[in-house]
Structure formats: C-alpha cells, structure tokens
Image (cartoon, rainbow, N blue to C red; front, side, top):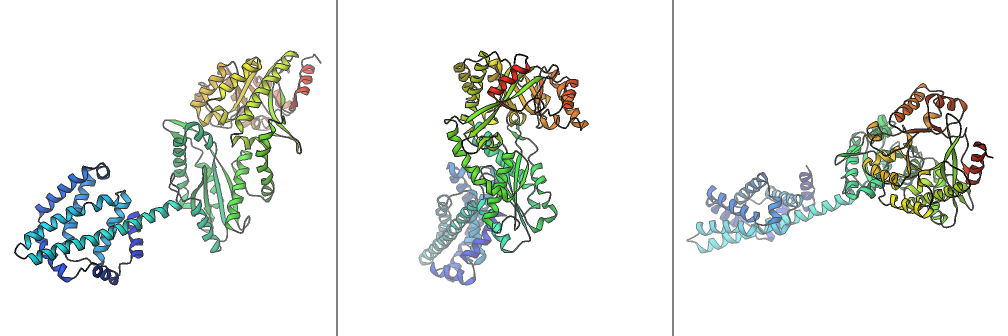
Length: 604
C-alpha cells in the first residue's frame, strides 16, 4: 500500500505522459532501430540462459553482508530472482514506453523502501549487460555493424533504467523525509507538526467546534529515568497502540511531547465527543506489561475547545497544555480549560525558580499532624507535612509547589531536606522527652532512585537520631509504578531500621499478592473512605475489610481524614490502630506540636 501510493505520487511528479517518454528516448538516442535489434536478440535469452544468470546473480549478492541481509530469506531471494528473469525479457522486448518506465520507477521505490542502497542495485547492471552482450554477439556473429549497434542499444536502455530507478529512489527518499517530518519515529503516530496542520485545516473550514484533548502519561518520567529510555520507548509504543484503538472515533491521534498524546475531535465525532475522555482513560487503566512485569501508570487529560476557549490554533494548543498541567498538578483525571488557569500559569512558572533558592534561604519548614491510638487516645507521633514560608506569599501549602518538584529534579534536594529536618526534629524532641514517631512522605521518583536509601543512611548517621522513630510513607500508586524496584528500595530502607507505611491505600491497584511481598509495617486508609464511611455502607465496608486484611498480614492500620466523633467511634469498633485528622488536630508547627504532645500525655 505504501509503495503503491509512493509510485503514483512520484509518477505524477516525474511526469510520464507520452511526450515525456519520447523526450527521454530522444535524449538517449533510443529509436526504432534499437527496438528492432533488441527484439532480434530476445530468442537467445532462453530459460537455461536466464536461469543460469539468476543463479549467478543470487550468489553474487549473497556474498555481501549488506545485500545478503536484505535478501536473506529464501522466499525473498526467490522473488528477487524472478524479478531479474522478467527484467531480461522486458529489456529485450523493444518497448520502453510509459508502462515500462512506470515499472522501473516502482522498482526504485521498492529499493528505497526495503533499504537497498543505489550502489548495490546499480552494481547489478553490468551483469545484466553481460548476458545481453553475449546474446548480441551470438545473434550478429556475421554482422559486426549490427552487433555494435545492438550492444549500444543495450547500453542506452540500461542507462534509461538506471536513471529512472535512481530518480525514483531519491524521490522516494524525499517522501520518506517528508514522512519523518510529520510522523513520530518511536510510535509511528503523527507528530506535533502534523497536529498543527490538522488544526489549521479544521479551523479554516470553519468546523462547528474542535475539541483538543492532550493526554499525559502519569509517572512516565519515573519509568524512563529508572528503567532506561529503551523501556520508556516500549511504554510509548504500547500507549500508542492503545491510542490508535480510538482513532476511528476521532479526527486525529498524535504524539506531541515526550509523554503527551493529542486527540482531535471535531464535527465528525459529535456522537462520541462527550465520552472521548472516558475512551482515552480506559486505555490506560490496564497495566503495561514490560518484559514479564507489570507497570501501572494511568493518564491525565487536559481539554480545550475551538472556538469556546481559543480562536486560533496556537492558543488552542497552549490552553490545552495549561489544562493538562493543571490535571497533573491536582492529580485528577480530566481538567477542561478555564480562563483562571491562564492567569495563574505565569505565577506557577516562577515558582520553580524561587523554590530552588528556598532551601538555601531556610524558607522550608515541617508542620506535624498528630496521630493518636484509636483505642485510648494517647499520642503516637505525627506525619510531617512540608510547608514553604514564602517571603511575599506567606505560608504556602504543599499543593501549590510539591507537584512542580515531582515533575523535575527538584524532588531530590527537597526530599533530602525533609529527611534531614525530620531527623533533626526527632533529636530535639528526644532531648525534651517527647516520644513517638515521625512519618515523612517520599515521592515515587525517590522510591525508584537507587541512591535514595544511601542518602537516607547518611542522614541517619549524621543526625544521630533513632531510625526506628522514623517512618516513610509511600503511595500505593507509587509502589505499583514498578513493584520490583519499589520492593528493593523499601527493603534497603527497612534495613536501616526505618519503618514503612503504604499511604492512600485503596485508591490504586495493589493487592494481597503485592502486599505480602512488600517490606511494610503499616497501611494508611485513604481519607476519601474515612470521611464518608459514616454515610456510606460501601465505604465503611472498605475501611472495615482493609483493617481486617492488614491485621491478618501483621500490619498496623492508620486512618487519615478523621473529622468527627462518629468516624472515630466506628474506627474504634473496627479495631483500627491509629488515626489522624482535623478532629484530632490540624498540622502544627514543631513548637505547637510539642505543647500538644505534653498536654495529651498529661505532662503539660
């Protein structure tokens, strides 16, 4: 199909009207006398002669690794031999009109398509000529003048063939370059340039509406950095296959960034436009099978529409990008563009630059949300939550800057600071007689960074704190990104004496199969279930079964998001070990937490 399309396009570009054919023949001085002489030698090209020639040519091409690789299979070599046989008969037929020349163009396109360089197939022409010359010498043995003219006719026709094949080859090569300019090499999908052209076309024909969906693969950068670019390319190829599955319901599916795909949906897909995001996201619900192990990724979608959100192509793309960025920042599945996002984006971009200086400037600080034993209410410790005391904006919650760090290498220095400051605070509290543990959150990129456990070991050694009082919290989805590497990293952390907790449990794809093999001490039930369990029997059942399951595996359970007495009473009834939430206490600065601890433990 690809070769046939290229041949038609090249025939149109080169021109194969009768006048063009005659012009080529006149340039090479090919005329009726040449046709007559060629037809005279054709009977000399017997089946035995042609068969022997094809066998010699096969042996010759097989002696070079470049051509033996291309013609290596018996089927392909037999096919090539048949082409050689037919060529010898055609070249001596005395007809080099439009049909003949089109066939030579097709041969040049095939050569380019299979990767056979001109030097190899042009090098076979002397062997063709040798057979033709032998036939001419035999036919005109008693007529030296005609013999010389017949040999000249063979040379002229070979020159015509070579020029046509080369012209077609380089035209096809140009087509390949054009294809490369408009299509992505890794996935084979249209690229950003093609997307721009498609949007221009739809906008120019004044489509009633054009929806642009930008699809970002969650945690792709983590996979690419920890497993390597080859595995990253494999993920992209698999993701592209899933995107193609919706291609017949959209106007265009393209890859437009390192981990970003685009879907364009205009008038022709009105019936499915409303459900397009579900079609897209459903494709990422299944794990990605990478050489025997599964990786759970998921996706986020930003959506913008012409002409509701933008009146031109560039603005439409930019606003869909802003919506996608917001979807990733909020860790939600789909975000439509809203004008307020654009007003925020310059401020968001400046945050990264300022955050790089915030660590050295001492602007970061930890606040501590207390945890209590559910059965007795006694204090158990706290979860450390990062805050940024910005010199102009005041105290900034993590949602305004942590997503930026997780998308960049800033996550590493920020996480290193959190580990060291938590250990420092534990040391101070130990001197003040304040017990309990402190839990810190680590991002998936930390978890899959082979150097992170070693950095934590150094921080523990430098700080002199008791590592058993430190707990790391990793999200369920972070573990599922690469369970094998996550388990190895967590085991190295456990070996330091640090305890491990799985946060947000119930929101991802973890199962008993994974849990029993992970070096874990605790599960944290996600607040979305805890907050509504008093009103939802289903959520209550999830909390209750999670507690039973964890206890059966020898794990303790902490419920987060406790906001009322009824929820706390239910957790006590279910046998939950620990709880945290605004009903117990909000996150507190270190000094206030120390006072809370003293009061709660009866020492204040």
